[in-house]
Length: 310
Image (tube, rainbow, N blue to C red; front, top):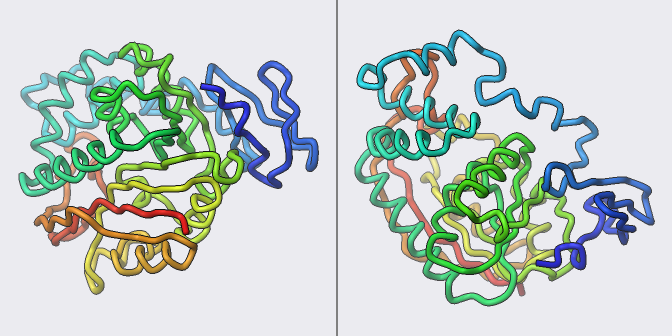
């Protein structure tokens, strides 16, 4: 995949002078680089790669010791999930996959798991019918990317804002034998390093619900891409859990659709499924919930969002 041909400066959209692993903007003078095989186009002004290698626990050795030494049969579902994530960041992928299979079904309600599988499967079915370039936005630990690569022979561009997650994902892709099929980019979804209309399809699985500033992000996606296929989870207007989100545009279906339309997209909601959800259990070791939402029991609407640039 020739990514270099579609790259530009994410800050000013200027042309890039490319020399080996360095990318220098010919207009604003900003410099970007390729690190550990990942294209770094963050423009936050701070070196977010500095903590690379600290792991999921980021030096909390006592917690890490408890997760590793406690008998798995005595760990709660949330602690099993956290242990699995910790092992992913440590590069122990066989153990990560084994424990995750046990933990994930126990964390969420059966209705949640069923609805999530349905909208994910439907999105992958739609993506398999598309041609051209695909960007998986907010790849994180690569759950949706893993599902897509399993059933498709397509090459994919992965974009995430976290260097730590992207580095871990690079190791995981290598373990799966998929590192030559995925080009990884670290960038902000609201400031992407791609030329206008250079991407055929952007996809994401619940990525929008973990972002901020929906309008700016939608405008940027409209600039670089022609189509959007997204798995989303929405709440109803008036849901008390909305008090815990910063941008309701990304969490209420009608606001989400209106914002997309306002930024130049033709939008449809497909495969809508309502499911009763509960707060994820509290970790007995760390005293936190794996998911911030919901805080109180509620009903989520799982939706496949299909949008075409006008």
